[in-house]
Image (cartoon, rainbow, N blue to C red; front, top):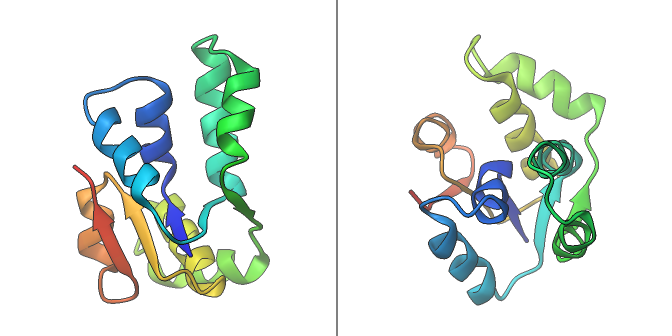
Length: 124
């Protein structure tokens, strides 16, 4: 299973500079695709804030398995994040617990920090 960072999907829905590359990655994915419920919340925030078509956004979000977040993920994140981007640590913790094969992001810092724990595919 592939877990996607919120930034990849936000890039697509807002039509930012890496949107095409992100969409191609999704289109070519052969494994199950997932996002955390934290990512779902962030994506919906941006969709509402930018007055996007919420029916379309919901349909897009339903392409992904929604991974629950647990207290185990939160504890793991507290131990790993070193006071630098708790949200990244929380998402990686969830992806690891759910046994995702890899995590896809646009965040170079996330890749640098967590590449030893999980395969990170960087799209930026």
